[in-house]
Image (tube, rainbow, N blue to C red; front, top):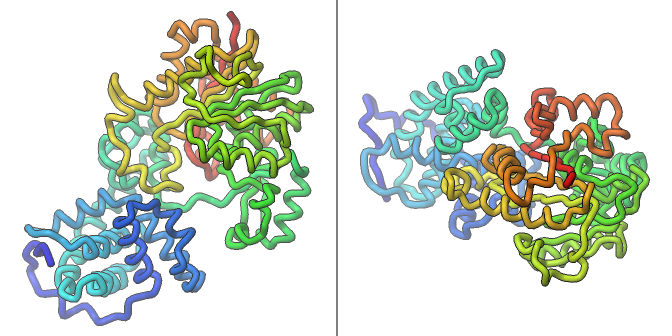
Length: 500
């Protein structure tokens, strides 16, 4: 079956009382194994698994936290477990069990006796011979690694309270990150990396946006109330948190596009990138499933406009979904959804809908997704350092090519917006600066996001959030909102005006 634990001073196996394995942990083990075997995304698997339907609400919540958390911290928990094995190979299901239990000890604060006892039963469910191994390994984790985690968490809290950047090693441990990624995040965020690490395992708050192409904010709010979802307004137009998320999928409100599930920072980016009422045509690059398309159009409508949108994505099935969604979402024939490699936007042989220029161009660039790791737990340990670091990094090079190609479609006096859901400077400020210094970017000048057209309709609370997120360079970074208590993902936005 596998590896032996490092020598113990006493035999602890007999001390662990036999315990019945909780349904939540049994389900978490099966789902974690399925994630590994199918190389599946954990959140999607949880959403579609029949196994979740048979659990009580409390067990369903624990299963979700265990599966997502263990995926998020897999590399770190594997290393912790391996440190307490002298040699040998673990069966994959036994490793799944130990990873889940190590995660629970390190990040969920479950009492040691409960976590170890349940962890032993979890390992025994994977292999009957694993009981003693699991007991010894998990006791060592509880006695040694939990202490180190608590000390690191205390140092990160102290750095946060002092407004200082945390130590890279502490961010890697508390945030369950590869050390290279922790180093890049500290370099990019400074003191903001403290909150990122401390909140890494907290589930994101469920939030939605009113689809202003179909209804008013008040109308959408009333429908959420009627559906029993206990909405509350957040300090941004149309942005609402849900006190009860469980009924959202069955309410019909998402299917009807009455409301749009979207992170608050993503909603802010869409509003700030929206054109003023006098802009007739807009180009959206990286449309995805059209959530931002609907938000852009809704914000423009709030400003009194009725912009026509040409939207491109490189993936054909996303464009097909987007066509259906924009029709259902109230745009009718005002949005055209096309499949195109966005690095070719400056070519002569693009589709006719793209051959002119646009008063507003929005590039929602493909990125590492490091700002969304709470929603996409696989990101941290699947992202390669070579993708974002160094002179030949793949993602920044692609982002710069897309931005340069899209710039050719901006009309004189028009605005170019560039956005990512990355917390890394290499994909954000560095790409924008490289563009502005390039031949394609010399006709552009930075435009502070506080000068975006939508700023004219923001109330004082929304303006306060916007100013907190705006740096001295005029770019938006959402960790400023986190500092004010807004639960949001990491997003970046730069606006540039074509002046030449």
